[in-house]
Image (cartoon, rainbow, N blue to C red; front, side, top):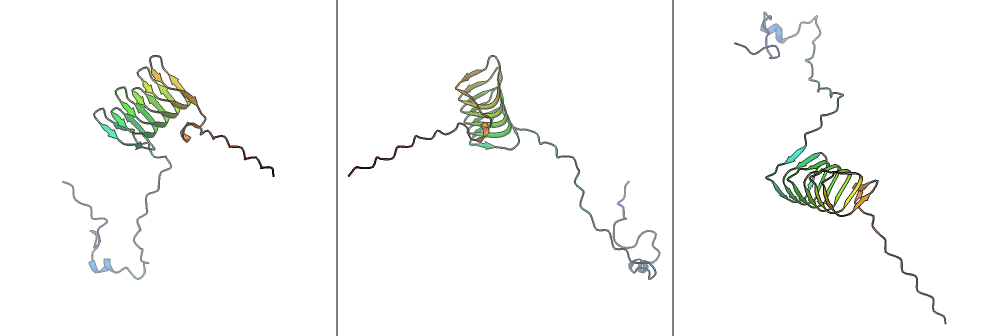
Length: 174
């Protein structure tokens, strides 16, 4: 029904009368070099954000997870999680440190939680300290631990306390 176009194929074209004349350009006409393929011009629109990675309810991960994108955890993770936007599902359990720019907890976390924006929903169960820039805790959420506000909670957590410097020994009198 459809036939392959012969426009870009080498050799004589349908309108050519003499195959030899097609191979040699006419003397009075300058030879036109074939067009080089040009790379596509990148569009000015930014790339679409990839969808969130979802760890389903039947998955168990033993180890750390790190992503620059978004993660939705519905299963069990025994290790630390770091992501841009992190959602812990209602049936999910995380045993380890959770770090993210935007963290929503619907399930259970046993460990420290650090985030710029932290939200504990009514079904959240958190056993550990929370270090945040902003926090919202809904009625019904269960939380055991301390809450500390920091301007940059993602920088590594609590500030280290320097031990006091011992005084220099007194000079002996001779």
